[in-house]
Length: 384
Ligand SMILES: Cc1cc2nc3c(=O)[nH]c(=O)nc-3n(C[C@H](O)[C@H](O)[C@H](O)COP(=O)(O)O)c2cc1C
Image 1 (cartoon, rainbow, N blue to C red):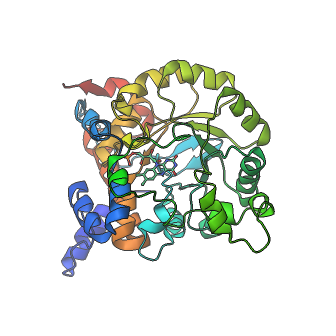
Image 2 (image 1 turned 60 degrees about the horizontal axis):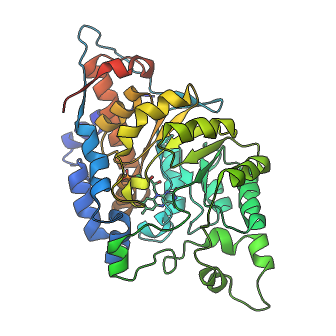
Image 3 (image 1 turned 90 degrees about the horizontal axis):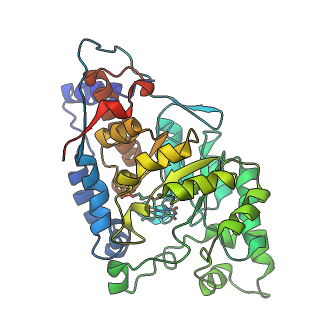
C-alpha cells in the first residue's frame, strides 16, 4: 500500500480546481478545530496538566532529533507494514485512545466515525472505555479491521472483568490498560470551567450497556444517572497484583499504557505484559514530567524485543519517522485526529491520517530508507 499516493491525489484535485478542504499543517488544523468545537470540549481536548509545560515539551522533544539523508538509494517503493501480535498491519501508526472522541464529532458519534476511518485507512483504532457508543457497536463499524480496546479498570472487579470479556467477545485484538489515570491529574483549564467532561459528554455507554453494571441498578433507575453518581467509575488504584489478576482474565495481548521507566518495563515483562505502551498521556495527567520521547530509548532497551507502542506529541509524519527510528514498533496519533474529526467527521480523520502517513513515506523515499527496518537509531542524530 502506498500512502505517498495521497500527494498525487491532492495535486490532481488541483488540476480540476479543487483545493484541499482540510488543513495541510498541524498549526492550521489546531486553529480550525478550536473554532469547530464547543469551548468546553476544546478546552478538555487541547488542554493538559498544570501550565501544560510537559505537553509542549512532548512536541518540542522531536525537534532535537534529525534524520540523516542517504543518497543514491532512491527506493521506488517503501514498506511501512509492521508485525504486531502475529498480525501484519499496513501502517506503523494507530489512533491512540481518546475517551471523549464521541463528542469531538459534530453528531456525537465520534467513536463510530473513527472506526470507519480505520476501515478506510487501515490505521488501527483504540476504542476507549469512555465511549459514546458501546464497544460492540464500535466493533460492528470496524467490520473486522483489527482494533484494540483501551481499558480503564473500575475498582469493582466484576465490572472490570465484564468489560474485558466483552472486548474479547467483540473481536478486539488486544487490550491496553491505562495505568496513569487511576486519579485525574490537575487540569487548570477544566477546573476553571468546573468541567468534568465525561459527565455531560455522555461517554459512559460502555457502563450503561454493561450487564454487570445494570444488575446493580435499582428498579426504574436511569443507567446514565447511576453511572454519573459512581464517577469516577473509570478509575481507582491499580497495582502490580491487580495486573496479575487482569492477566488471568484474558488471553488477549495485554499492553501497559503509561510506562516510561525502564525498571517498570522489566517488571511488566515479569508480570506477563505482551507490549509496553510508552506514553505520558500527552502531558494531560502530570505536569513537570519528562517528554515521552526522551524516555523511549531506555524503554526500548529494557523491553528487549517486546513490542513498544509510543505516543505523546506526534504532530507530523516526520515525528512518526523519528519515533520509529528510535525503535518504536508503532506510533500513536492523539489530538490531531480528534481535530480532524471535529472538522470533517470520517473524512477529516482520514485526511489527517493519510497526510501523516504520506509525509512519513515521502521522507523514507527522499532520505533513502526503503523499509522500516532500515530506520534505526543510527539514522538519527541529536541536534540540540
Ligand atoms: C481528549 C483526550 C482524551 C483522552 N482520553 C484517553 C483515554 O480515555 N484513555 C487513554 O488511555 N488515553 C486517553 N488520552 C491520551 C491519548 O491516548 C494519548 O496518550 C495522548 O493523546 C497523546 O498525546 P498527544 O495527543 O499530545 O499526542 C486522551 C487524550 C486526549 C487528548
